[in-house]
Amino acid sequence: MSNPPVNTGRRKFLTLTTGVVGGIGAAAVAVPFIKSWSPSEKAKAAGAPVTVDISKIQPGQLIRVEWRGKPVWVVSRTPKILDELASHADRLRDPDSLEAQQPGYAQNPQRSLKPKIFVAVGICTHLGCSPSYLPDSFSEQVEGVQSGFFCPCHGSKFDLAGRVFQNVPAPLNLVIPPHYYISDTQILIGQDKGDA
Image 1 (cartoon, rainbow, N blue to C red):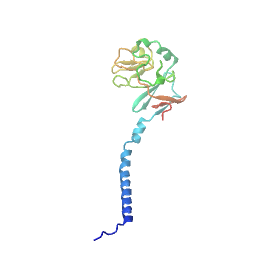
Image 2: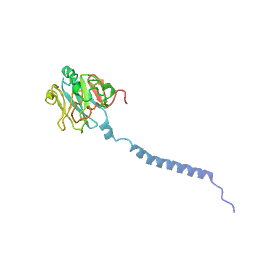
Image 3: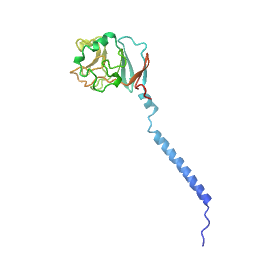
Image 4: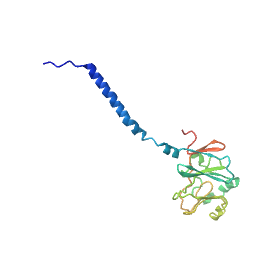
């Protein structure tokens, strides 16, 4: 008894069809699975950089914006405030900003790209409260210092460079977020210059 002849054309067709159908099925399963690893549009928007227009900010004024769910302050410092920053360095915990609460470009006495404009995350480094901005009455908290940030929850005090005073609960200076100037009147907060 002999075997019937093998139809190689039919075998190739079935093999090819099975491979194609299997490949489509694998892709149908893999694409949604891999896509689920990407952040949602809502998550992307929440973490996206924020553009701040400072064209109308007045001397001594503070503007609040939100970035990644955190308050970010933009303060226009006056020449008097800038002069005051050097007067109380001996009363600060980290006057030279040696701890890493700022990008390298803001590791200077003003902790900013431009001395006049101060940008900081408005959250106390103690327990995450949001301090109050006291542009004219901070001397009630720290004698001889007219302007600063005061956290009424636990008594932490920061100057207008976000540097923490000694003998308060906050262990570190305020955090400076990554940022850069798009133009003279616009700041992009949440991204360093050159980052994509």
